[in-house]
Image (cartoon, rainbow, N blue to C red):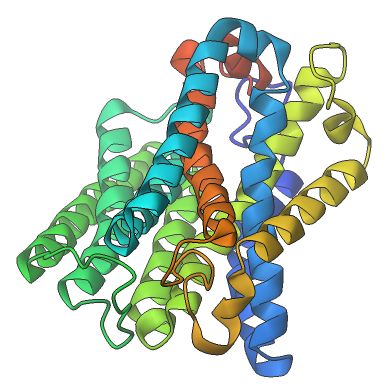
Amino acid sequence: MNSERSPWIVSPRFDLSFFLLGAWLVPILLWAGIGLWGLLTSLLIFRVLDYSHIFVTWPFTFGDRETMTAHGRWYRVGFLAIVILSVLMTTLGRSAQVLWWSVFIYWGAFHIIRQHYGFLRIYQARQGATPELAKAEVGLLYSGTAFPYLLNLSQGWALDPMGDQVFQLPVPAVLAWGALGIFVACAVQVAWGWWCLLRSGRRVGWQRLLHLVLAISNFWVGLLWAGQTNAALAALFITSYHDLQYHGVIWWVGQRRYRRRDSNPFGSLFTARLPLLLVGFVLAAGCLHTLMIGDLSWLPGLEWSRFAFSDEPGPMMYVANFFIGTVAAHYLFDGKMWKMSENPRLRQELDLSRPSGA
């Protein structure tokens, strides 16, 4: 990390474990676990990993004194607005709940793609990608993830109907094939750009190539193959490795941010040599979230939530939709806390404040 020319976000070992190969293996291993140990084991592990990455955002926002001094009103108002919206949609009845859940689902997919975009931009900054090639790679990422997603929407989620629990957006199939056309065009431009770099003897930056391949491949496998008959598998492929990447970058930035600063009462979660406290925290949070919203109902019938979609309002319906609201708050917070244009401290922690070697 000391060299400004390092092509890695953190280090080869860390990046390969959390951002690249290790992260890509997570959905593969969980998918294999479905056959070996049953749907229960795999989905419980997946849901705990997924929900825990939501709560680990809170020490970085509400627990961080500098963040709350600079943007505290934004985080408090945003969280309160989402909680009020969740209560309101629960009170208005089932149609409003379906609308609320649909916004949550579609926003979540965009949130995941934006994380991959963020990692790509960091790799590009570390490796000094040319503006033309960088734009082509961004287009490749967006079109490559959009194609399987739009294709599934155009087919009503293919062979796995989601019932009345999500509004089916009327997406024309031509949009999906248009995204595929853009993907092919960007792939040609990216391949030509990399070939020119190789021919001139300059560094290609295979780390960001691997990141693109892994991000796009998980969307294609999850939505066009594994998720064709099982919505949980589709979510597993496009979400579980995203969770591992998030935990990795949270721990790394927390190490650098709180090792010498007393700006967070939760700083010890991140500064231990081994992230045992952080692991314990996120596992406890994930288990709590899983039990509170009743998501064990995913296992036998793949119901979205037995409490959130009960026929008559009740206390547990409000509890369930409150926790769904915390996920939506995570989407909102995540779009703010990682904006480097508003957070010079983050640029320093990721060694991006200095110009790249290119």
